[in-house]
Length: 215
Image 1: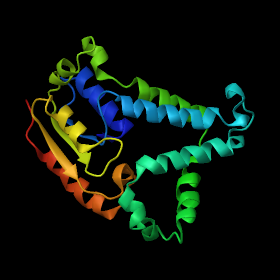
Image 2: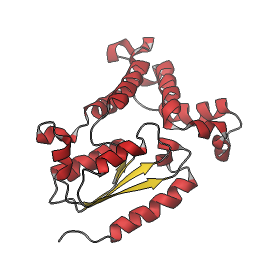
Image 3: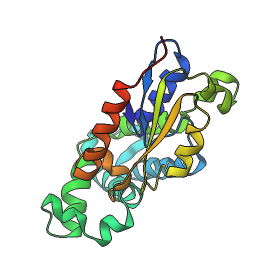
Image 4: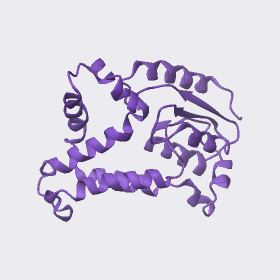
């Protein structure tokens, strides 16, 4: 089980080791990076490498890339949450007093402690994600290898991994079901701060764990 890039890894293991993986729950992610994801990830990359303190990756202090890390936080705000999250000021549930307070206290403080080169490594991993490399580029054949009882879990308001795309993947997997979770937090429902997301995902995973599997 995993969300976002963790979902991609879940797909990877289920395809690569079909005899070993008996249950799988990829949440809000794809088995192969889409062009939209690739472009967004490239924007995240440029947010870091365009910082003057980047110095070709030879920065002396990872915290020197303050500007680049803050830009990355704002880019993630654009697609990591939903328009209704901002319209309804749902960040107030986290005790932030203003939008700027939320962007700084929640998102910037999330990214600022990170090492830029580690983030770039994760971005590269995301852009290279593709289970069809195991089947000569044939995604349908790759997903048909999955033997696990699989719940493909989508978040209905997710701007990065929309439900219809998750459904396309699910239909290629034998013995699978599509489960849709409602969250106005969108992709950031994965953070676990939205009680509605948690209320729905826990019984979904409990049901999967109790489901019958192949011998």
